Structures are given as structure tokens and as C-alpha cells.
Image 1 (cartoon, rainbow, N blue to C red):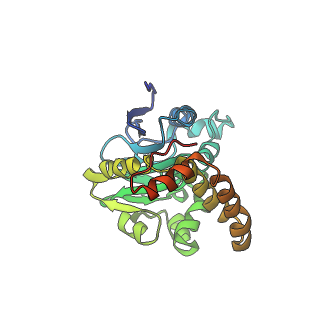
Image 2 (cartoon, one colour):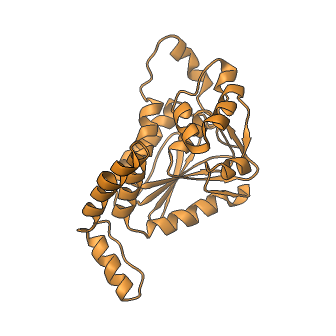
Image 3 (spheres, rainbow, N blue to C red):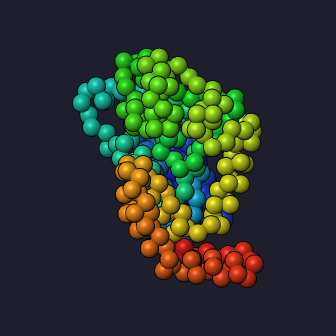
Length: 260
């Protein structure tokens, strides 16, 4: 598939698509970046040859520094942006295919909020992250006040948001926000290795697992098990992938999942 975007550099490696935010100098989440991410999500969702998306940043220092300050004047003038960050971030969070954030540099404001919406997160051990909007007299407005406390707890999340201070990647790993922390030069390779492993998995099962976890965290344990998880199990037991997985297990070979 040929990809042509203004603010994303996109390449496909097998069933893995890698999209690098390319909006120097800060890879800020302006309208152009949001538009291109939205279009990429629509394109990849329809393509059975894409099973995992990796979102990273261009350049060595920043995954994304957050909102595009050059667009603030439009907001202050009351202009409604065409692409809403919250809508696109929910789209990422609810996406039926795995999305990995590969943060080769710092992630701040809307950049960190973007990473929080992805299903898995890998970050450079030299990098930091934070929600510094309070220093501009603002609040995190693309889900930061809601998602970050769910990852690292209310107390630490409030400290970060109220002070605007940055957190080292190793601390975010300890608190459960990140899946892996590796040297900056290894971030993308590590993400692609994980993506290729996931691309060989059962797509329908992955989709149902992500959905069940997301909905379950918004529910109570009993309903999560008896309604959400049970519905996923009932849907999966009739799939071709389940038949293939069971057959491959008995035949002691790697399964060939088709996503059906």
C-alpha cells in the first residue's frame, strides 16, 4: 500500500505499519497531524493486510510536545477546529487493531495523552514525560486528567498535573504506564519486534481482549466477567481462528490465523 501524508511519514513492513509524526520542530499535535492520523486509522482498519500500527515521532528528542501553540489564537477567537483531539484519541483507544506508541523522545501534553490512548507503550530510557498545561494556565484537555490517574494513580497524577513537572521514563515504567523502557536507539526496533509478534497472533481474539479490558475497567467485576468477558468468549468460539488455533496446537505447529 502507498501512503502519502503531509504530517506523517508512513511505511509498511509486512502486516505492521509504522507512522512517524513529522511536524518539526516539536511534532506538535496540530490539525494536520490529527487529520493524517485520522485518515491513516480509517485506511488501516479496512485493510486486512495491516494488523498492528506503531506510532512514533520523527527526530531524536521528541515523540510529541503536545498541542500546537500556533493554533491557540484560533481557539481563543472561538474557532472550532475541524479535527477534535478527543474524538481521534477515543478512536485510537477503541481501535480494533493493536496500536503501539514508540516514544523515542519526550512526550508532553497532547503527546502523552496520545500515548495513553495507545494499547501498548515503549519509551526511551533517557526520555521524560508529563502534562505541563498548568504552566500555560490550561488543563490537560485530551483525556489526561482522566486516563493518567487510571494508569499511575490519583496522587502521582495530580502531582504531575498540578506542578507541570516531568517524570523520567523509568519511574513511569515502575508505576505501570509503560510496557518497556529501552535505550533511545532501540525504541523503534523494540516496538517493531513486538508488533511483528502481535501481527502473527489471532486478530479477532486480540480485538475482543482489548474490548473486554476497556469495557471491564468501566464496569464492576461481576458484570465484567459474566457479561463482557462471556460475550467475547461466545463470539470467539465460533471463529475460524479458534478452529485453526486448536488444530495447530494438536498438530504441534504454529497457527496461521486469518482474522476470521
